[in-house]
Amino acid sequence: MLITSFLMTSCIEDFRIDTEDGEHLVGINGYFTNEYKKHQIVISKTTDFYSEEDAEMISGAEVFIHDGVDTIYFEETDIKGYYETIDSVAGVAGRTYYLSVNIVDEDGLHNYYSQSTMRENISQIDSMVVKEVEDDFASNFMGAASYTMTNLYPYFQSVDDPETNYLINIIVNDTTVMNVSYLQCNSLSLKHLAGMYFNGSEMVGMIGEQSVHTFKTTQGYYDNDSIYYFDMNYYPIVTEGDKVTLCIYSVNPEFITYKNDISSSFGSNPMMGMPYNVATNIYPGGTAVGFFEALSVTKGSFIY
Image (cartoon, rainbow, N blue to C red; front, side):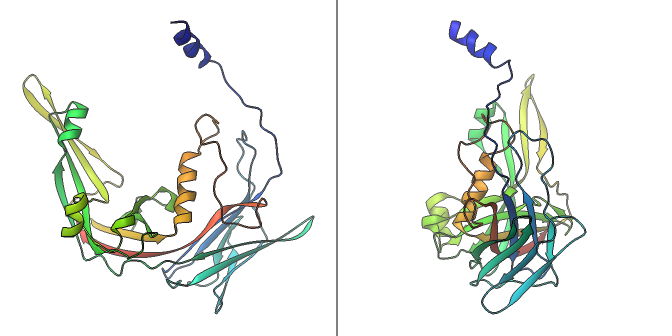
């Protein structure tokens, strides 16, 4: 009882850890894909741990990408710190892209750099099926009379590389995007199942049929010997007749590490994050943070 009382009262008072203020580093985040469009790089400075102010954006940088053949230049947009390719371009799977960022300040010229190889992706999504699946375990665990999920099941030939990681995103009617940031997309790794036909007979026989997105969950509960139902719709809400596009991105393992670090280290509460620095592939080491990733995408659409 004494221990419980101590724990309960100790959680009431604000707890602040003294952190040593260090030099603000340059933050660089950007993606380059095989989509024909203008690609973006965002450049800012890091902030203090407890700071509630917006990050300082860096203007006037020279930004370009090269792959040993072509050089792709960026220009700053009307939004400070946001840089876009001058022209619409598309990357090529299998190529390594080198990012270079030059920044001049009161201490002179600073060069920050990174590289990322755009991995091969699946050639196409052969088909997609939406169906309801009853979950007996969830029904028992949630105390519900029934627990039914409306899931999306794609079928495709996976890449024969156990290090390939996929990101899953959903677009509805070409305008509503489930996750604007790649960091918010669901991740999928097949590992020892790489090279199998996704949701083919061999894979299903080993691990069962696999969905990549849940549109809706319907729960039924008893009430005086009657069952009533309610639906939990997942973002984005999809209705009959909507055009649904499944996006499957192929990314490097290092990006998944970065993504997981970001999702584990959030907010300004040191008790809510992991006690380590977030991964980065921006160099020179110790002078910058962030990530540059070249990723390829394959899309497939259907009418819901």
